[in-house]
Length: 233
DNA sequence: GCGACAG
DNA sequence: ATCTTGTCGC
Image 1 (cartoon, rainbow, N blue to C red):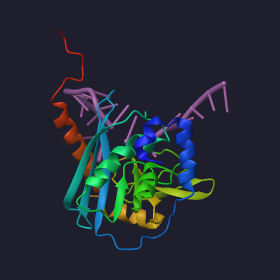
Image 2: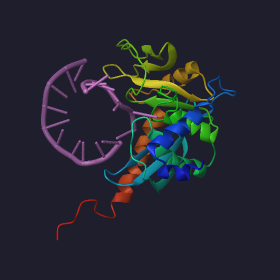
Image 3: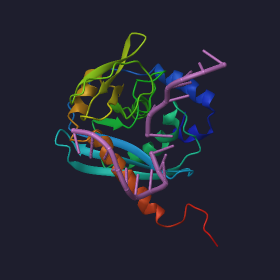
């Protein structure tokens, strides 16, 4: 199935596709060391179908920005909890194709396998691009866990019926934890280790944080042309 | 039936 | 996610 056709899927069909994708998930150690790590995110104006996607490339472990790509696209697929990938992945793939070179691993803003059907946006993106991926979410979607300790890097496992599906990580003191889970072609341990090495004083790891800054920047720049609200007179 | 519910 | 200023806490 082509991602471009995602907007025509019904929620039921999207779920059926996730069951299909689930069979292809492969959680295992990386085959090569990480020298370049990428971060992806999207932004949009309320009530608008226009989505601004962006991917940032950082040198690892220095985390200096060495490249990026963006794409302005449209989507008709609404936000539905559990089906986030169908709304955001198409635009992200457009940005992915524009990258000057590909990263060794990608960090997505959302879940990896910490998902009811193990198909969070990071897993979905990893399967389609065949690139190792990690999910770093700002809130929990699925799985049971105990609140991690209050010190930086304290962590707590997330389970689904006894199966480890993610890790709640305290990335910053006095802040809510972030939820890490492998997406595809990477292990749980490596996912957490990489994210830990991407924390730079903020709650959000650099790849995703920089991607967020990037897409918000292009959205604001693009919006300075017309008025979203009904103009008076 | 009730509560939860990535971005 | 986005809309938005000040403000409580470390």
